[in-house]
Amino acid sequence: MKATILIIDDDIVDTKVMLKALKKSKISNEIICAENGEEGLEILRKHQDEKTFVVLLDLNMPRMDGHEFLETIRADHNLKSTIVFVVTTSNDDIDKWKAYQKNISGYILKENVAEDFIKKIIMLDYFLLAVELPPKIKPKINDGH
Image (cartoon, rainbow, N blue to C red):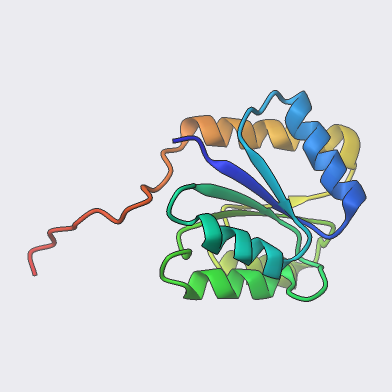
């Protein structure tokens, strides 16, 4: 199953740059955009049974920021295994530490957005091609108990 890419970012210009980079990298996954964490959470919950998501998450947003979004999905039994890459302008060590404490898959800086970002998106494409994503239905695990 191909993952759907969910971009959660309130900056329209940054979202357009990400979409352009994804297109230029020939990533053919379905892409959905949300303007804040609340909207992104709504999309994940609405489609959790039918789609596997890889989230590209900005940290600094109104209503529900990226840290609050991560805290919410990691506490949600149905969403806690969602793959999330933080894509942000924040190079702050505290932001990085807090994000990695919520089991993100990577932290990508938006510096040199045009040229450098395309290289980073190509890495995401390799990730999507190489990694086996979790199944939608939790398999029965026989652990001897």
